[in-house]
Image (cartoon, rainbow, N blue to C red):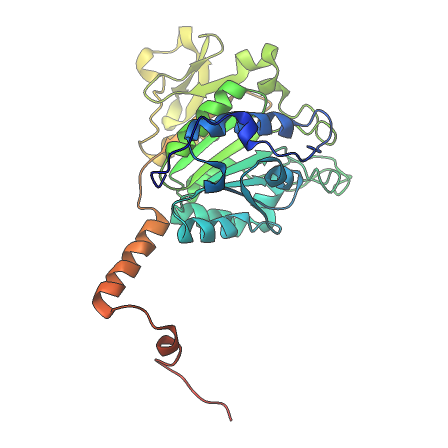
Length: 339
């Protein structure tokens, strides 16, 4: 970025001296380690990278990555990041948020950052609970979830974060898992290379208030059977080649046995095709991550980047009208005096 030459960077260049303080065993530790190990790949010096976070356990992330950082207010991280990325397109801007922070009070800011295609990378840690405030149900908690704020079980229908991002027409939408460093690194690599808004949902275990929510995908003995790994241009086959995603009645996507499925009925993943395919894949797990669930890049397309479009407008206005004059602007148009 910006043609700046840097020496060889390592994980240590992106680790602060601050004591990392999450609950022992929290999935955030694994995500932090993966991100710190990945950042040197970018070849961007730490002072050209910005992490913006909101409120929640994920909000502490900015204190543990030795880059510029902004610990914002609840739900507003995408809005703050939008301003930074628009004013300083030379910077690499990342947002770290949680399911409560991003999808409750911050839902409005999230969808507009995605639809505008701001050049920011959003990492949403989804543990399906409010961890920092001690275990209340969140916008992604399953129906019937018993928590301190829902002692008789939640009656809310949860958000599907991938479907939500696709509905906002995000140009890059993906999902990964906290303890799968290789897969998460691959997804981060793809997101960093993408021009525009990238949304990554990361299943993150909260071992204190929602332990085991993703065991069917995180634990090796279960993951080998339940992770549906999406790879562009390849048939969607999983469970060690035994099962697949296929086209059923009325065009619905269903999970079937490979041995009993016609080859032309097996779905071939297309990140750049119609958004309806990605949307259907987001709903493959009808009851959440307790059954076979898709991970990987659901969709990646190209669209004009928000900040670049604004810069083009400013350039055009300057060419036509000359340099801006703030005092003149404030006194132009409809003005009035108050005596």
